[in-house]
Image 1 (cartoon, rainbow, N blue to C red):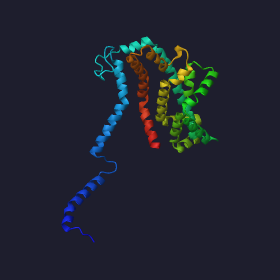
Image 2: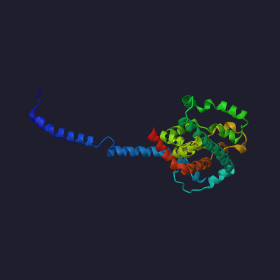
Image 3: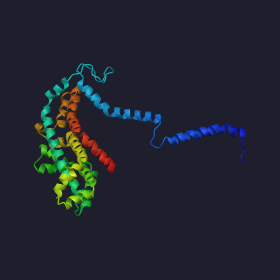
Image 4: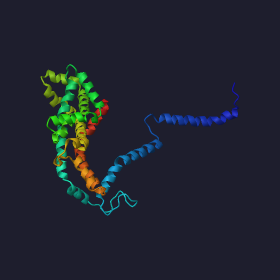
Length: 306
């Protein structure tokens, strides 16, 4: 039997009512609603991630625009250049044949992107739409190859490229990346999202495989194809290890290999290295801006399907 006095129970009643109202307010806020405190924490975390993500890039850009008389590492140095100049970019061009190396990188990147567009589209369509014996085994093998690190197969790749006669050539640099397994899986997943009834109707109307790819499959997977283009271009443009192994003639160097000469020749002037990094970044930004509309649509398609 309870021994709580009646007066104490009466005093506790307002507190219970207040707690009940607070609980109702929390329950009425809903699962997806956020309190002002949570909102502030989210924005603080977003700003922190933003600073970590683009902070080094802004510092690199600032360093590339600073004049030789301006301090870079001292306490007086700031993010905004006091006397911004573009001379560092001209000095990079004087130190190495930038346009030559950019042209070589563009050729390699174009070969890789073209190979992935054609090869991954056809492979993805075949795995998603054509019925043949061993299809699941092929998909399993593709997944298995993704487990292996690139360094584990790099010797076999070099021996193959050398026996084909493509050593020290731009085609030899591009050849291993012209059919990326991750891109094949992306296109396979994209073609699986097309309703089967559309394919069956096209077959009934007499469409062959090429017509189904051209008029049904290709327009429906432009978003995923944009992702393939960006991934293939960035992978080919930024690759350093494989071109360093394959290429020996300086005239065939890609931009990433050529930029290492800036570090050796001007080790005490990081402004030139920063300017070279900015030159290498510009083509990536141009490609991303060109296909960003389809890229975000492809990311959305993947999110819905996933």
